[in-house]
Amino acid sequence: MGKDLQEVAAKDRLLVAGLGGGASVDGVDAALCELAGGTSAPFEAKLLAYHDEPYSQDMRERILAVAEGEPIKADDLCRLNFRVGQAFARAGRNLLEKAARKREDLDLVGFHGQTLSHLPPRVEVGMQTSLMVRRGSTFQLGEPAMIAELLGVPVVANFRVRDIAAGGQGGPLGPYVDYLMFSHPERTRAAVNIGGITTVTYLPKGGRPEDTLAFDSGPGSMIIDGLVQLMTLGKQRYDKGGALGRQGQVDGYVLGELLKHPYLQRPPPKSTGREEFGSAYARYLYEWGIQRGVRPTDVLCTATAFTAITLADAVKRFLLPKGPIEEIIVSGGGALNDLLMSRLHKEFDPNPITTSDQFGIPAKAKEAFVFAVLARETVQGRPGNLPSATGAEGLRVLGQIIPA
Image (cartoon, rainbow, N blue to C red):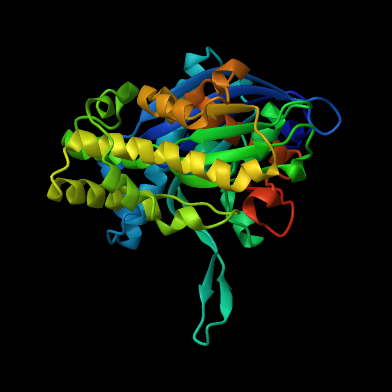
């Protein structure tokens, strides 16, 4: 017998699993959280366990191929959608086992799925040079009903779509949770999440949720990961600790060309993804660098610097005019890349940089943690988007609920 949705929504303290597939398409991130408080009581969050589970090589290659534009038949997409849902359900079971918890203990799952395509709204020039807005769209792979069925709990999924429908970017999704976790009455902070894409959230001291500003600054680890896979012929999926990048040097000309990317000039609100900085971009950069006689390790080192510099430039251009930032909190897999972190320290000196680990959330667990918190907000009827971050027409309760 599955958990009753109304009973779950009425509970003040919930055990929630967050499940997400990052932009790098390396596998499932899963976080088990105990959550309480909210509207009338201080927000409480405790991370009990984290588990990451890589996709099979076949599944990863298939997802990447479709995401990069390879044609797929409707029946093959249908099967892949359910296979991905099963993979997430399996990761959820393994998370519970790691935490020594039973399925009956779990109240809820927040499921982001694997983003296959994310197309934020764009302002375009029409036939008569007039401006028009192209409404955005987004599609996350992975059937949430499989998770509800196999784990026996309600699932909240498809978080992006309601914000998109309300005219927003559909992301970034983490700023509301950044506000709950990191806002401070006397310190202005910037919360930075470096996954496949880098997201920055501005948290003014003593600010309200509507004072929060957030956007995707540009690439995170996505280009770095793509280059490493090309360099190692697929034997490595990422630059562990930044070891490969440290073997190279920044090529000034290549870096200068990268910094001309049009996305970097757009003002917030804005979001981006694999469509602009995915495998195709990494392959182009790699091959272009080789043609210019740039060593692969130099291309990788330059791409790492590109991630740090675009973040620093976005902060200086869009956030510092609002006032000084006293602390920068970094999360996401990029926080484990020592070369990238050393570059960030250089770019932001003398501002102190710490990681979300200091707040009880291991850097790699942050994104899955976000989906757990958003799921709880949804079943209890609270909005999870910040229009100041996404550009949506207003606050919206996010996601679609699949009962157990």
